[in-house]
Length: 266
Image (cartoon, rainbow, N blue to C red; front, side, top):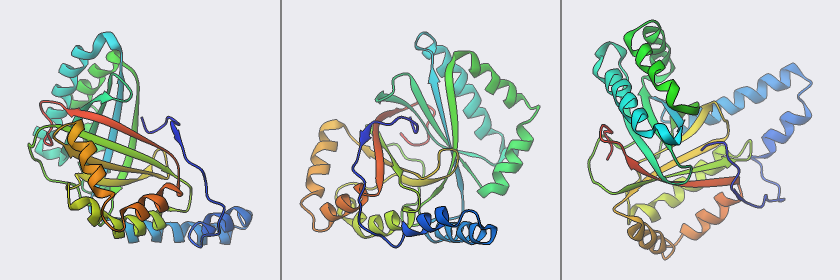
């Protein structure tokens, strides 16, 4: 999850002024002044598309198949302990198990008060009882990954709720330099989806695997998901949104998740 190349999408050959930024940076990478200028412009793009208030850490655990139940118990102790400790000032957006996709994979999303909050919490965790709880999870894992993301300004995360059903986490690997165009296109087309389903959240990566976008949706079941997506195609503008954004991505994943008992989103 977040690293596998699955659905390949053809890349466009047409010139695009937003993507042109990354090309120019490649040509001028030998010039320190040009490199610094390019980095500043990329940071400005993030400021334009980001909500900017929070940092969301996506923690992905790939669990040994024969250790799933032991992992669930250890993970619940760790994550509920983090949230209960008010000094840490960290919130659990949600925790899920993969139903369709990479099997025996678990996703937890933690919310921090921007990078300052993340740094502070990380420092407080060192040597604490929570660190011991985290280490207790390790024997049950095949691998794990951590990615820091920010919310899109037009797509703030949903507060805790209990609606039941399933969640869909869609991950898109974008071509470098296309984030602003992606955001602009989605901002115009999102109303077509909102007519039938309210999004749970959307993020873009800052640290970890870069140039990734994540969208999270919730449905009662897979049949309703299918019907909802079909309805969106009947709304003006949605097909154009899909067509344009698909040309900006090199691959995409869609995973169906079920919430863990202690997940605030369920």
